[in-house]
Image (cartoon, rainbow, N blue to C red; front, side):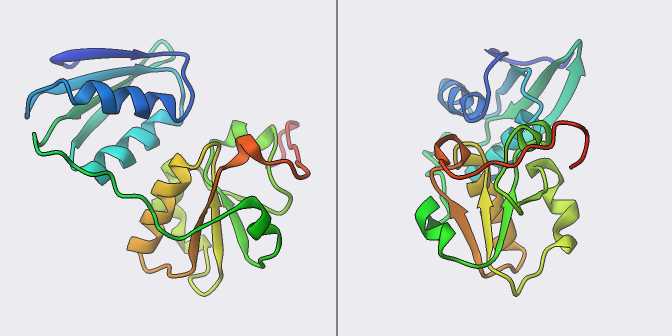
Length: 187
């Protein structure tokens, strides 16, 4: 294993809790120190890498051992870094009145067990390499479980020239509309 100055146990926690706990714990470190985050949520790899990038810390990498992901993040500054949030948002009600692509950035398993009808699944960790599947001229409504991953995904899309991007808040946890399930292998 990689040498770390502090360990954080986030095993068994789902998004956004690994990020919330990491954010709190990294504030206890000195600049240059390394935090090891132990997690079992497969989505935490993309989530923590994206979060670290948005707040100015260095995401060193991840080692997987016995179904546990060991993430390593180096604190890069003692300055208080204000986390940026994506400004363009829509509510569930607004979404029903709009025409465009619903982009679900949750992990495949989360998507399979319930998603908005017609939504396109591109997990956060694959988004950068699959942007060519999206139309820059189409409105894109990004959604995840709570709004955290979709916020980071919307920022990434905007940074790459997508201008009609909206973060759907609050996220799938509070979606009351119909759900489509694909648990028999068909994504």
